[in-house]
Image (cartoon, rainbow, N blue to C red; front, side, top):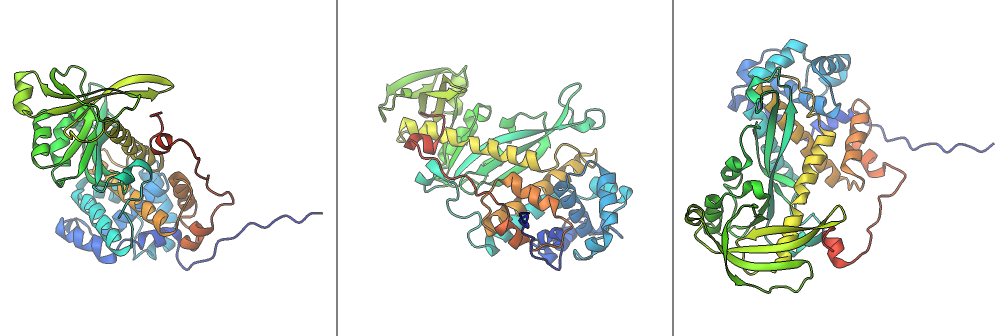
Length: 414
């Protein structure tokens, strides 16, 4: 009889996978932030650290409700206590903490952890980690967009934006080189995306590039960005009135239909943006069909093809939103208040950040979703997490596929 091949068993460790993941968070950080935001004054037996660990576990385990989180942590109370003395919550404790403890603490914890990881993990979120066309630019490229998080209208009146619909929105500015957020706002869905543009772009530096969809076309704000030396590119609205000043010929690419310098025709729009604009019309292949798309930019020297490709890069923020929605627990919430929703969204983004750091440190070559699955399945195992990630899997990641240069940079523009 043929001997069955024994599967590789991960190396043992004195700590659980969950503890190894939580150890990435400095011990003093949560305590200091709890004092700063007054959260420690609202806690007795259920500490702020225990609260953060509980919400991290809720995302990692895809918990479906308060009972799911509380029962699982109580059954593993001994292992949980090794995570800096964290204690399992009761249903009332966790619900009350989500409702009354300031969610600004969770938001600041996320940005503090991002700064900490960038300072302590050499090379993390620095330099050009994204491949393709973005490597041609020395300045940072940002993408603006938002994602809607559906909520229960019957229980969350504060989030209603239709008679029978309730939702929250996460507005984000994503750094396309590092694939990490630089600004994020969690709010109700009743506000239009353009109302958050000022806050999202407040700290952009001269020379940096920002790309966005037509929802963010607000000429007064675009004029302010141009005055600050920020380059931008986006989709033009269908009803935009303009006058062509002159035509340009910056490229002979067959997909470029028109390249024009224009000025706005309506008095109100011209008062908001009194400068010249660039209008580029290009053919874009979507679902096998060629569709005309009209792009706007304030940069008059880029080639028209560069403008089209820059906008194509904006798709990365859609990939980011898909990544967090497929892995984090953003469909079942542990509380009905706005504060509870913000706690869960920000701790979810923190889980994503920690996973991205693990992926970078241990050279994970498989998909992010598979990384999340491996960690989730071994939360209470005492396995060496670095050794597990560095040796996991029998199948090698798929190799790169060679093709035409324009296909390698941005598929869809052929």
